Amino acid sequence: MGEVFFRRLSRWQADGDREELADLYVSAYEEPPGEEYRNRERFLARLSEDAQRPRFDMVVADDAEGDDDEPAGVAYGYPLHRDGSWWRGFVGVLPDEVEELTASGKVFAIAELMVLPEHRRRGIGTRLQERLLAASDADLAVALVDPAGVEAQAAFQAWEWERFGELRPDPGASVLQVFTRVLPG
Image (cartoon, rainbow, N blue to C red; front, side, top):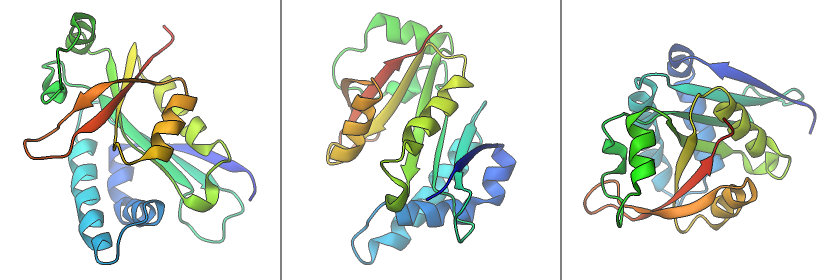
């Protein structure tokens, strides 16, 4: 395990690397047999939709000594739309200051952050989210985490994110944990 290099991808580069990114997604998340294909297709659909958002940003981690061309990890996100639609399904009352930050375009969502299992515990996830957030002009970062994702929750808490509440993105969908982090201004 050697040195890791980080690079930004534009939306067009992300689209060009979509199959490689989908392979990374399948490898990063252990799925029950038969689910890999369905979840891979869902990831590709989400990536395609997210990459079209204004100011979409992506950071990829490459292992300099890796035998293959598969990245070690990736993080991507985008500023939340000012209309507050991302918050639909929030459980409880959204604080006024969060509504105001969203309306002013100062909230950045990490839509995906994944690191291959063999590259975990090397600080790659930490550096991915730091580099992604450093390029934003946001005052607040948000991320949705599956309540069953104990490792992901522990990572976000180690990175000084706070559990903020719960959100059900779509009717009938599972409730997800909302994590937030105030960004240095």
